[in-house]
Every structure is written in C-alpha cells, then in structure tokens.
Image (cartoon, rainbow, N blue to C red):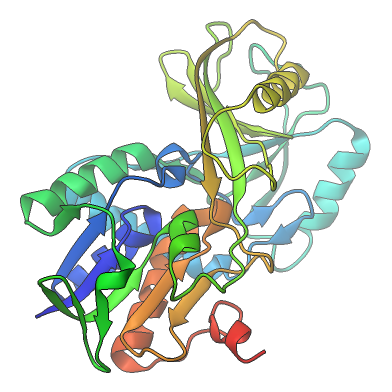
Length: 347
C-alpha cells in the first residue's frame, strides 16, 4: 500500500507530491495531460495586488516556503526554474506615482514596494512618469518545471499517464482502492478538470480563461518584468511572454481572435516598437468564486482530499498550501478557514 495517490501533475499536484516525498511518504501520480493552465502560466510571483494596492493574502508566510521549495527542487532536478526578477509597474501619471507612495507607507506593503521611482529608459517603451519597483518578485519557468518533474517521476516509476475513472474508486474509511492500487489517501489536484469529479463537483470552482503570447521584439531591451494592463516578461533571445486576458464565460483552452485582438491592443499601449507573435496560448485557470483556494478533506470520506483553486498565483501558493494539506492529513493541524473547503459544506 502506498501513502498517496495524486491525481494531476500541474503546480498543485507536483507541490503535494514533493512535500510528501520530502516527508518520506510513498506516492503515485496519475495524469492524462488534459489540463494545460500550469504549463502555459506566466509563472509570476508578486506579493502585491497592484490594481488595488493590497497584499496577497499570507504573502509574508508563503514567499519563504516557496523559495525554499523551489531551491530544493532545483538541486534535485539539476535545472534553474526560479528566476528572481524585479517587477516594474509603469506609471501613466503623477497621480499614479502619488498612489504608489501612499501604498508604500502601509505597514504590510512596505517590505514589498520600493519608495524609489525608477527613471531608467527602456528601449521600445515610453515612460515619462517612470516606474515603481515591486520587491521579492520573479517568475517560475512552469513549462520546464513540469517537464523535468514528470521525467523525475517516470524515472522512479511514480507516474501513470492515463485518465482517472471515478467509478472505479472504492473508499474504505482509512484507505482507498483504485484498480490494483491501494493507498492510504488520494489527493485530487486536477485544476479545472475538477468539474468532472463526483466527489468535489459541488464546490464553486469557476474557471477563468487566460490567453497569452510569446512575441519577438528585437528593438525591445528588457531585463525586468513590466506590469501594466498586461505583463511583459523577458525570456531571452528577443522573446517575451505577454499576458494575460481574463474571460469568465469561455471554458475552453482554444486561443481566440477576441483574445488576440485584446492582447495586441494592450501591447500597443505599452510598446512603441514592432513585434511579431511567435505563439498564441490559452488555458483555463482554476479560480474560485470567493477568490480563495480549495483545500481539505471530503466531508464524508476521510481518505479523499483536494488541492485546487490556486488561480493566477499557483507558483506562490502551491508549496504553502500543499504543506498545509499534508500537515492537516498527517498531523491533524487545522487548515486556515479561508482555504478549507469546510467553509462550503458547513453552509
């Protein structure tokens, strides 16, 4: 019997897998490669919601856990996935500068917002009012991370590439049986695929489609991430990842003309140089109506658990939430009410 059967190998699934392995637990990961939001994600981590100048919930606690997690993974996988890089918020007016300084005076935001206006000129961008710098930021190369981690799981015979058949799951109080697999616990980390899961489909996972580009812009010269109505993230070799759109109605992962038009318009608001679209990507983020993750144990089945709803902040939330779920299962350490799925069952 293994300790954990984990369904899904996106950011949530590999976060939980790795936390379990770090604690000497046996695992098997099952995935059918149907969800791609983690693969195409921007992968940015940023402790501040810049639209409203508020701290991302628990950012001070989540960032150290995230940094340790990816540092350990980089050594294990022998590749660099966590790229620390400043995020600069372009100012469009003196009023925006003033709002920034007001926000940087707040006790909870002071560690994350520099009080120096960045006046450096970047080729390809007009910025007469300069930029504000967000601290403790960067991005995770999610495509490389997921590829390398899957290879690692396969090497150790801890991975099955197949669709999960819910009708074959048998729950017996302190363990589960799935086909020939016996496990103490099963953790569903399926992203938007949760809608097909009979154990958790009653939870309010909404799903928000995001589209982004990889563009080539030879005249653009960036070594930072620019954030305005979209982000522009340098990948090297004159390539940049640009995104993202938010569509709450369309639940497919097919790129659209509407998304393309919206992104082009927003890029032209920021860049004053030519660019070409190299790739157009789309995926459905697992978002929740109350903007909080879905973490915890099924109300009637003690061995069936969920880790989902990481939304747009998967790289920052994944390791901390996986750790919280693991400690809840193994040591009965209570989950924060704002992430615990019991907040819905009790209603």
